[in-house]
Image (tube, rainbow, N blue to C red; front, side, top):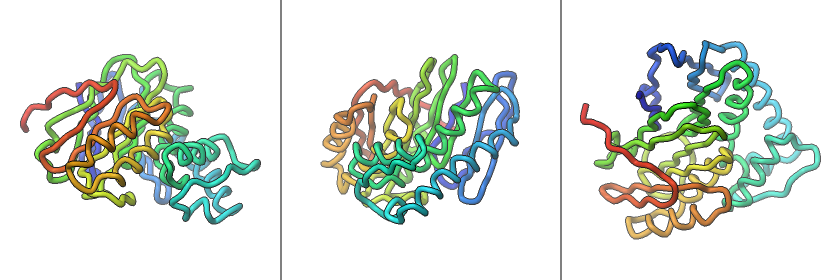
Amino acid sequence: MRGITLYEPRSYRDFEQTDRFKAFRVVVEQSDLYVRAASALHGETEELIRRCRSEIEAAITRRHEFLNSLEPIEEHEADSPAVTRMVRAGRKAGTGPMAAVAGTVAEYVGRGLLQWSREVIVENGGDLFIKVDEPVLVGLFAGNSPFNGRLALSVGPTPIPIGVSTSSGTFGHSLSMGNADAATVVSHDIPLADAVATAAGNRISNADDLKKAVEWALSVPGVEGALAVLSDKIAVVGNLELVPLPLP
């Protein structure tokens, strides 16, 4: 099985076409999504991205703190269900709602594509929506750590879609206030996985923080498992299956 890897820049994306999956990319403004589905659903994916972005942009217009706050904010009665889930994810994780934006877009698109494809994988900058009938490997990329590209999570089958989100303080474009090479969270609530991965990464300044950060992440209701990497140290908790990847 080929893995979906978490890394920036996005040269890791595998566009090999198989009987099981067609792989394609759709970019709408800042949203750059990689999708694997039964067919190349470019138009459907673009429309779903635009809908989700429109809902988020409307929330930002209603109150600017939605965009800028690094702390939890209150729900608004005019928010869409997707936006409300961003706010709730931030509340559980102790972050602003935009900490869940990539996971929210991935989930919105992934769930929408399920009407055309039984299996769907959507990756959005290190945040994945996964709905598969057979296992897939999610490769762990962790900057300059010796674990980089050497381990993968085995995920699936997933009768209920699941999210795998990674935050890093050493690579990628997402805001992180920590030093972790990777902080990865698994949850059936994909926006929550995104927000908690950000918050866990923020808690890691040195190797002594790894265990405390992943244990905190696992304590958040809805989180299935978490791991964190800093240099040659790794901490893993919860319902995760790690497998080694062969050397290139």
